[in-house]
Length: 463
Image (tube, rainbow, N blue to C red; front, side):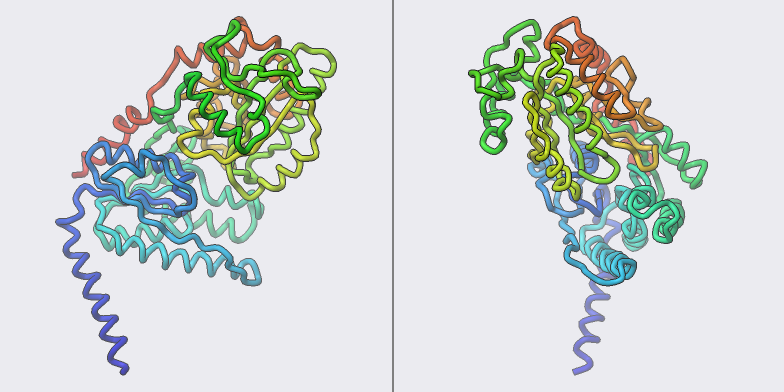
């Protein structure tokens, strides 16, 4: 009887060895794009997969399947999804032990998944999260004789420090781990020049900057598509129910979004003109303090009550995350007459349509490292949507104050900016309109062009 498990182990080892020796011929060109997170909420990694597929590469897109990836990913015949099971419900005391057990289980689970997939020439890994995925991907690359590329979106240890503090032992371990195993990658990408410099100076890691760029479907939305989206949202969200999209009206015809369908006592429609559509998006985590926006909206409501000629607002905050219930509770305690707020989760195809329909975007992302840039602003700019963004160190690499948007530091400054931008809205001689015109005139490279210039040569020179 004891020989049975030994035979099974031997067969498993033989199968792995066979796959390993077979790999050299069978894996040419294939790339594993991996993230130890939700693929549906990892747009940059989806873009990598689509770019690779566009150049004829087979792609294994590996990660959690909690939310549906974009339809372009699902329809691609060259992209195969490799799901990783998300570990939930693990409850062990103390917390430190729970974290250690989770990391160990994730490492085993991820390594098993990487070793059973088709052999890749490259593993392109998102960081963060990098613990344990960087070490596991490095081991898998040794097994497959593949090259490891790390795409640095931020530092994992700085994200952890938001919850635990910079000096917590777990944060210090994560920092040491990230620097050590980050050096083992064959190539490194990063999202800003500031991060590129920091990786070199503090980690001795040489990286290439690949800025986030909007995909081709981030663009201004035609009125017909606006109407379809609002009718869809109206089934579940009150702010959209009394509104519809009609023929463009007024001086800002090309930006027509909402038109009145009738007056209701005490309803937001009773305020002057059509309401302005304000959009933000978030993962509802500690690095975004949405009380800043809520306080600014309280001030904005006060301006209207004082007689300032401002439009009513529909504020849409999209996303999922751990603090969503907390902020929804705060929102429920606000009793606005001229502002309505809703917090939907949108499908990947609907989100660009919403941005392309909006009048102003707001970003409350504060980088934990000060070295990454908010992709949500990139998407907004792709839709020629002006942005008010909260200040942090390298934000100037993306948001040009008083050119394509405004940068604020607190709720009072944001409220003043909203008042200035929406003064006698809508009008063609407003600051808001000039920002949009600047965005239209200064359209930069899209994702496809930027990727082809930055990443494609890196792959081709090594094959």
